[in-house]
Length: 293
Ligand code: NAP
Image (tube, rainbow, N blue to C red; front, side, top):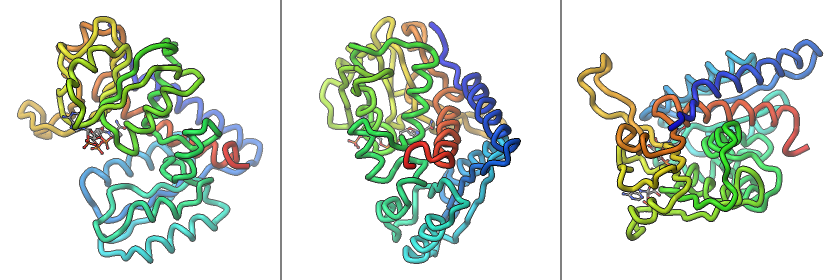
């Protein structure tokens, strides 16, 4: 069993991005600028946005955090998105989800200009990704691809089972793993809460990607000997032994599954750290006009 070490990889990737930005600065070029919009203080959004802003600082990127009270209207939010779209100094824009119920997240995503949509949530980017055209790919699936490729994990001809069909992780992951490229060329099965015989399906996976948000759901009996297991889940569970009173747990029961695998991601220290790196990489691409020139 080998750990897919998100901590190590994310440090390497951040160093690479920092080096590129240092060069841009040296040459008097435009420093990439990421804008994050945060509405209210719901759930873990505050923590997520803070770590994204901190990562920008670490790599030498410019970042701006725009905060709105939870009572902001949809029209006000859309106007701000448009303002960022029109500002040539701002290269990438993310609007942290979830949004309050009175605001349509779909409408907000569709208002972000595809060329600034570094989260890859705009239908144009999703469509382009599905067609295999240059596109911003959503950060978590892109982080997983990066992990597979940096560890040289063979994917062609493998059976990849994705558990969870969310718009931000499971669905794009399934599209990406079947593409005729590396990493890709898998035979993909996308599963969800209505899938029958899920344990059997998972057991047939050479590459198992769990993104369902049920801590410890994937147990040893659901995993094939020698599989590659990617754990996207990240949930807080009560843990009296921790100072904070909780621990972060993935969808995979790591202790019992890890010994059966060839490769596995830990939680924390796996996919989560890669996600932020992908966002930085996308912002750099946006600033350089690599996807939409
Ligand atoms: P989500 O929107 O919460 O959707 C969960 C998916 O899992 C749904 O498709 C659901 O099926 C499926 N599911 C739920 N229970 C199931 C069961 N018992 N058997 C089979 N499928 C089941 O998913 P998400 O936003 O992708 O989040 C999933 C997890 O990943 C969460 O823990 C989240 O915190 C974590 N996450 C981590 C990162 C990171 O950077 N590490 C990024 C994003 C998300 P239905 O569609 O049928 O309801």
